[in-house]
Length: 187
Image (cartoon, rainbow, N blue to C red):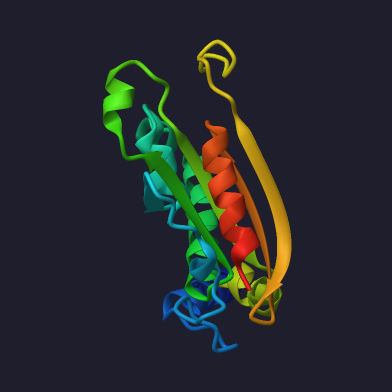
């Protein structure tokens, strides 16, 4: 029993070290490469962009999120594992995500529903090259009643000899039009 525990502990340490010792995978892929997923996220006029770097941050930013995580050890462990994989995939440029919020807060103060959205980009080639390394190591009002016109879309294309997949959604059609125009313009 003690021998199994020793080996299991050793394997866990190696697994955790696999993606935490640096942002470069054995493949040499990094988040700063020209074909990394991060390079394909749009900068939209009139919107602030915030990178979505962890599931823990997203969950704790919502009301009661920290209590939800700390009160459920199994959920906390699962979220931590997903965060580790997400950081690994981000580090090798396979996955990137951002949240967008409108700049004009005056409209929000005036009672208009805020324009927000999210975009995720997946570089399929990097995801497949780094998959094993990262896996092993690494109650609201309805949109109609709030006067919101939700939108969304997705697609896939080859850019710089890398296949990227993107998905987005927002609370305003103009956000989705801007995002789609960005992806349509990539060469």
